[in-house]
Image 1 (cartoon, rainbow, N blue to C red):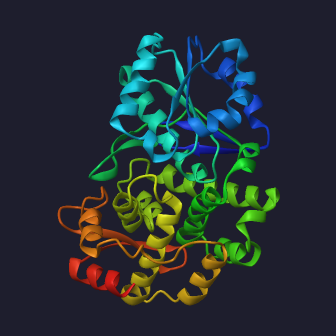
Image 2: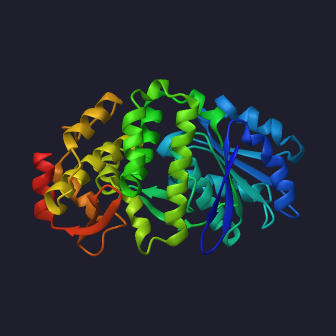
Length: 356
């Protein structure tokens, strides 16, 4: 087990990474949450079938309540959020209760927002079950979706701890592995050229990744995320760099219908677009042809789905929470590990979409 300490302005908390770390949750609850009254586990249908019994077995002395949401982005609706709050109220959770988020990034977002808004904020703990959640479980950004934009209704609410049990990753389907690993690649691009080169050298097939290689990649990604969040908890500056690829990626997700295209795979297309802009506007020296060849070998789509309207994508990008007024701000790279926020005109973005 490896422990990574996350330091933010509002809270310091540990991230425990390793196979079987769920077995440490019971002791943490006993030692770190005084006068704990109730536990509400928020999970989804897929994770509940695969892994819920494993979590319940280590929490049997607490008799936790379980709320099961739909899988994927369908968990992040107003209706599901309302139902989760109703479950908390019906079971008389109070300010000494804790919510355990047990699932991927969508469940983490939902659970964290329930915890942030219930009684003006109660404790929650992240228990991620996907590769994608190595990014989303750290940093305290929690939210639900609106039809007009992804993650537009939310809060900053840091967890008490993150228990990242790598055993849960063994049941992930191929598309979820790709979705999660795109965020690992993102961390390398924005922060560490050596890490990027290491990934290119060592990662050739996402479906047969050895646990040691996956674990090292995830721990490095978490450390990069933690360092950035520690400097800018509420995204007033450099934390925006973590959004490389997300402006177009979120627009693609929205236009495809939430849940019909995985977050990470949409972000990968967004990253290619951002890298192309970076080469043309900032002189990025990265060999984009080589990059695209590598990620295609890993199974990623590299083009915008043909039926999507470029004008609609542009309008969705304008609604992105990173935009200011009518200006669209993109995270670009001056070079590997050197991100930069840049406002780009509609005309340039539309021309690049058409030639993408």
